[in-house]
Length: 141
Image 1: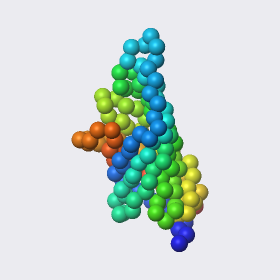
Image 2: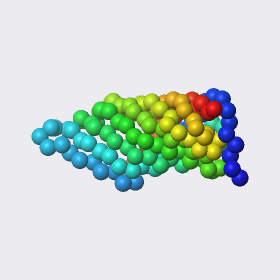
Image 3: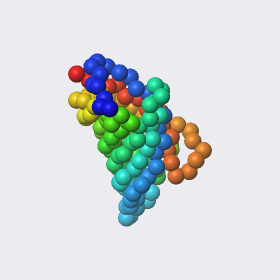
Image 4: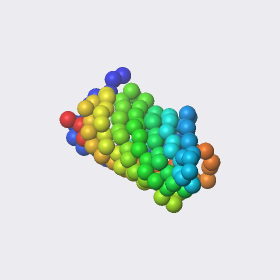
């Protein structure tokens, strides 16, 4: 069933688990501890309202000794087919990631969406995956 666009502003809070799928990490020659990485990643977001969305995204980072800027592009797709596409920019510092979202577009219930948001890494005991707290402030016409 197609989703109906929701006019107005919504705050969507979620927990996000991510995992690299095809991530390339390159050590920079002659710069101790400097790495550049980019590639595809995947995640699952669990929203406070009970909905679940898959997140397909491309991620880039320029890190020295594990700290530095990150950015990428994410599409969150809900089970009704609606989606939110956002660019993110932030940084990793002392092993913690924090950043901001700028919503670029949406489909279905989020058709022509704009807005902002943010994310911050959360403590997790598992290896090879990341856990984040996230939030979108979605504006739809």
